[in-house]
Length: 384
Image (tube, rainbow, N blue to C red; front, side, top):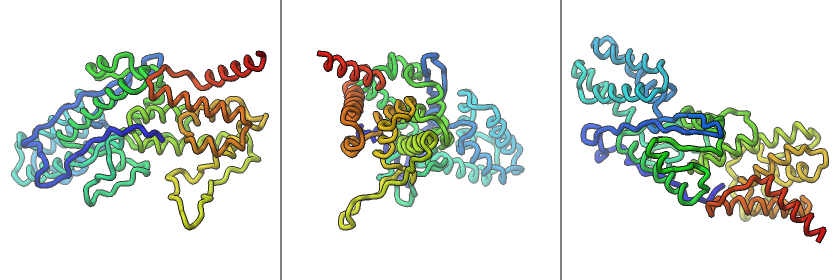
C-alpha cells in the first residue's frame, strides 16, 4: 500500500454550530470530465455525486411520497423529481434538481406551513450528511455515533451527500490533490493540469477509458465488477493511488489477489493455494491483514509462475506488473529463496525503479521493457 500522504478534508458534524443553507448558501459544482486513453474518450463524473443512481434524489422522492396530496404544488414537485431521475445525468438536469430543492427550503413553493416544515426537514437530513466519498473520508475523526467500516464494498460506505460548505471543501481538496499530482508524480497524468482544471477536464492518456468507467461505477454505486482482468485491476489500483483513494486501493488489492488465484488455478489445477497462516508466536501476535480470505502465500504463486517451465508467459507478465505496484520490500525478501537469484534480483530492480519513477516524477518505462533491458545488459556483460 502506498505511503503517499493522503489528501483528506474535515467536515463539521451536524449540530448547533453547523452552517445551514439559510446562512451559508449552496455551492453549485460543475461536472468533472475525464479524457481517457489514446482515443481521448470523454467521460464525466459529477463532483457533487448527484446522478440518476444516487440515493440523494431517489431517497428524497421516496420520503416525499407520503406528503403527496397535501398540495398540488408539492405533488407536482415530487413528480418533477421523479421525471428528472429518468432523464439521466446531464449537468443541466442536476442543476435543476438542486435549484428545486433550494426553492422548497426557502419556502418559494406555495405549500401549507406544516407540509413545508416536514419537507424542509427531510431535505435538511438529505443534505446534511457528514461524509461524501471514501477518498475524502477520515474514519479516525468520524463524529461520535457514526458507524464506519471502509472495508465493506457497499453503497452506504461510498456515498455521503453534503451541504454547501462540505461540497466546497471537496472541490478544494480535489483541486489541491491535482496540484500535488502535478508537482510530485509523473507528468503523464495530464498534459496540462492547470488548463485541465480551468475547463474541469483531466487528461489521462495513460489510463484506459474502461478503467475510468470502473472508477466512476465505484464512485456512484459503491460497487465494482467481480471479474475483470488482473491488468485492468492493476491499472485501476494506480488510478486510485493517484487520487489518494485508500479504501478503493484496498478493495482492488483484494480483487487483484483473487484474480491471480483464479489465473493460477486455471493454468495449474494441481497447485493448491491455501490462505496464509501467521508464523508469529502467540506471545507477540500480529494483527490479521484486512485482505481477502483467498490471500495466498506470495512465495507459492511466484514459485509456480517463475520457476515452472509450463507457466504461461502472459501470466508471468501479469504477476510481474502486479508485484510492481503491490509488493512490499518484506515480500521480496520472503521470496528470495523460492526463486532463482537472477529472477529475484530482476523483480526487485523493476519494483525499485518503478517506485523511484513515481517519487521523482520521471518518465515510466513498462516493467516488461525493464526486464528486457536487464536481460540484455546481463547478456552483454556475459559476452564481455
